[in-house]
Structures are given as C-alpha cells and as structure tokens.
Length: 210
Length: 247
Image 1 (tube, rainbow over the protein chains, first blue to last red):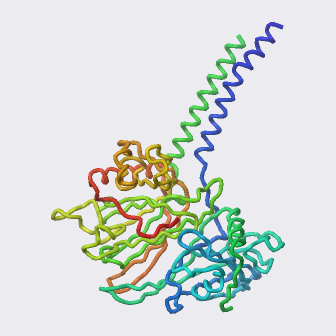
Image 2 (cartoon, rainbow over the protein chains, first blue to last red; image 1 turned 60 degrees about the vertical axis):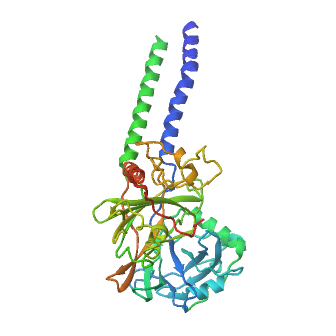
Image 3 (tube, rainbow over the protein chains, first blue to last red; image 1 turned 90 degrees about the vertical axis):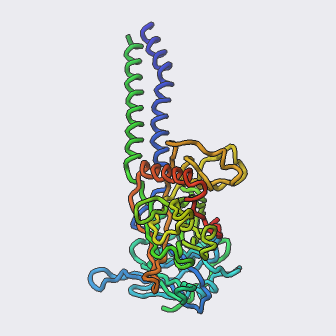
C-alpha cells in the first residue's frame, strides 16, 4: 500500500515535469518549422506586367502541353488568371479553357480591360496563372457559382509574358523582353484565397485568341 | 527506490530533450532553407534608369505565411564586397519595383535604389557601382520593437538588428543599435524577382532571379555584414526601397 502510494506520488510529481519537457521539445521542433513550405511541381505561376497600355505591345501566352503526340492523350485544362495592383489589391480575374497543344494569347492591355470591372486600370502589377481541371466553365471564383472544387493540375500549362521597357538616353528606345511565368510552389489552400478575392470583384472575360 | 529510478528517468529524458533541441537547432542552422535566397546580376548598373528589378510575394496569407514579408537586398560589387543593403516590405501579390540606378549623376545619391550609395568611396565621394551582384533574402518582418511601437509596423531590418541605420525612422535610429553578434533573420519563402539587364549598352535582356541555397547561419552572416558596413558607412551602404510601396 505504502509502495503503491509512493509510486503514484512519484508519477504525479514527475509527470508534470515530464509533460513540460516533452512539450518544450515539441514546441522547439514546431518553431523551427513554422514557415510556409513550397510544394513542387506546382500549378501556380506568377510574373509581373508593366505599361499595359503601351501600344498594346505586351502579351501573355498560355499553352496546354499535355499531348505529346505519342502515348499521352491530351486533356482540356483551365487557366485561372488573377491580376493584382502593386499594393496587392485584386484588379480582376477570369478563366479560360485551353485544349491540348493549344496556345491561348491576349495582350495584357486587352486582358486587363476585360477583367477590370471596377477600375482604375493599373499601370503595372502582378499576374498569376493557376492550372486546374476543366470544370465549372473555368470560373475563377471556384465554388461560388455552385460548381465543384477545382483540382490543381501541375505540369499541364506553360505560360510566358512579354514586357515593354522604354529607356532614355544614352540608350534611348523601346525594348521588349520576355520570360516564362515563375513557378511559385504555393500550397493548395492559396487557390481558395484567390477564388475568394475574385468573388469580391466578380469574374471578367479573358478574351484573346485561341 | 522508485523515486530514485523515476528521477533518473526524468533526468535522462530531459538530457535527451536538450540534445534533441540542440541537434534540431544545429540542423536548422546548417541546412538550406528552401526558396529563401534569390540571386541575379546587373550590368551597366551605373546608367540611370536602364535596369529595373521587380519583386513579388506570391504566397497568400495563411497560418504559415504572413501577409507582409521582407525582401532583403544585399548588393555586392565584382570584388565580392558587400556595398549596399536594405530591407523592403512586400505584401502578398504586391509588386515592388526598384530602379537599380534611378537618377542623374546629381540625383544618384538620393534616387538610385541599389547602387548609388555604396560603401566604397573614391576621391571622397561614393562611387556608383558599374556592376552589381544582387542577392535577395526573404524573411519575416522584425519583431515588434517597444521603442517604435505604432511608428511603423512594417520594419524590414536587413541587418537583423545589428545596426539598422536607415531601416527605422531616422529619429529612432539611436534606439535600435543592438550590437554585434545578434543578427538574426527569420527566413521564410518565397519571393519571386526579375531583373532587366542592359547588355553592351545597346540591348536589353531580362531574367528571373535564380534560386540559391541559404542556411540560417549564412543569412545571419549577411545580416551582420550588412550591419557592419552601415555602421562604418555612417549613412552610406543603405539602399532604397524605391518610391512605390508594395503594400
């Protein structure tokens, strides 16, 4: 009886200390990892736009490269497009279905006019393209229209954007550069955030040529 | 007897926990943290208005990612010398645009963002860098500072607190010199950046900043080095976040 009581007291006395030690270990471990972790391959890509009204020179290209002509059959995918002002506020959004081996394109100027339902048109900002399965009519608002949740589809769409740069003396002239959109490795939850932001301004129309 | 055994057990577990924490910390210090360092170069950097750098934070706000993070710029010359550094806040999906050298010769000291206020001097005045190696470190906003509470919530101190000259409101500089060896940056992914390059003074190209490995130790070294040149520079060595706030 006495022995059992001693054991219980010991457990009670040291249990708290043990809990603290284990808790501290767990907290220490989690603190070291408390940061977002990029995930690759990714369905998210990003770049910036500038001078969208400069003679309509800047373009964006999005290609569905899922049909390699041999064993892999092609599938339609949605390109969900979200544009932002430099201060992070959303300009507008749209979605477009892209068929296998198709390259959709539009000028940045026209794209922004189509999706900026509230204005003002930005002079520069960021643009994000998300590759998903082809459902909901590629509505960038996601389930806001009662449709199904999108699945992210990495390694299906490739995107490029051109930038017009006007330089003064001593070079003087207009120069165009081009880049692929950067892969971002964002977590899947980012799509829900983008859809929500899109819901606040309403979807626009991507327009463009197919 | 049971008490003794229990004591030994607890002591052993405590020691194990300490060792584990130490090992974790050591591992974290020496293991590259994904997507926290980007690097690029700028030729003809001293020609005003010719080269631009654009930076964005593509990650949306979440429990693991703050809405506003910092882009720490560390500008090196061709001799590996750190010449300028600064930290700039940037919000999710925001766009930070920097003119590498933003003004005429007379304006360079105040308008050039990254190469116009270097540590090096020649003939008694700063020498604008003709070529720059630019590294961008992404890190969390500095912890709240009781001295400046409410003055500016978006403090991005690229010195990690070593000597944040120019990183805080000027009237508060004197309160934030925390001394050598205390430089820490809380790294977080995941900025994306692009730089235009004026090639041969005739053509313009552009490229995305490339990813490079960065350990916590290396990041802290950058921060402390940044503090060192800003302290010795007495106003030099501090770059600018430009006129457009990406917030």
